[in-house]
Amino acid sequence: MRPEVSVNPDRKRILIIEDENHIAEGLRLNLFLKGYDAKIAADGASGLKIWKEWRPGLIVLDIMLPGMDGFSVLRNIRLEDERLPVLILSARSEADDKVKGLAYGVDDYLSKPFNLEEFLLRVERLLKRAAWSSESREGGENSGAPDSIGGIYVFGVNTIDLDRFQAECRQGKVNLTEQEIKLLKLFAAHPGRPLSRSEILELCWGYAPGTPTRTVDNFIVRFRKYFEDDPQNPVHFKSIRGIGYLFNP
Ligand code: CA
Image (cartoon, rainbow, N blue to C red; front, side, top):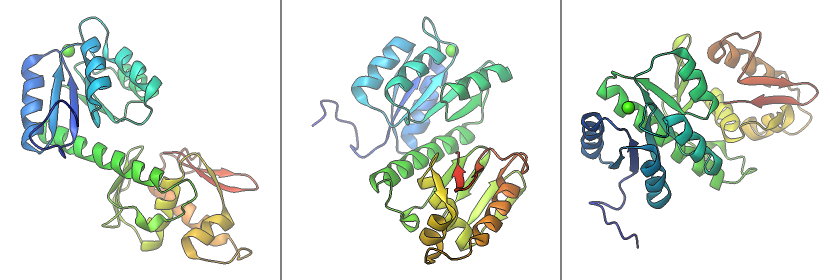
């Protein structure tokens, strides 16, 4: 039993580290109305303390804080937890900050002033993604069960609705086929791990090893067209010579 009893123990916990009280209170209230349990820390040190004791499922983090700044808070968290979703709020709009944040493992970034609806949408998206990725972790590295995964999956600038077979990407809204979704789920379940063509065929198509592997290549060409900045120099769907492909979220 946790000593702190909230209204509903199933509410997802969100920690807001923000020194501007009116912003923090506004966010806390709106998160509460959306069914979340939110706490506020007005500086980095107390933020880290609450993070350790309360173990929130997501952190909303301001950059400009008294004392320790948001980036230091983030680096501290990332030493222990690489996966906790962190949404940065910043009054600074320099592209520099964004790049720095991404390098430190920020999951999403909002510049102040921001739209409240957009904020709530991003929170929801990040929590879904985190829940999804922990499910796929529990499934085990080699579970190879891409069908059990659902919801929203985000990588780079792409948002995939795995249940509705739709993607929001550089090309706008794209409808995906069942087979494309299956392959995306497989990649998403194995980020950073090289997958051989025959492995992919076996898991996604159910082919016996030794079947021609050209099919996989055709799908990758399409994925790169949809999801890569520059399909000729892919960042997300990389070829591994002599093996197959590696997905980089
Ligand atoms: Ca601030």
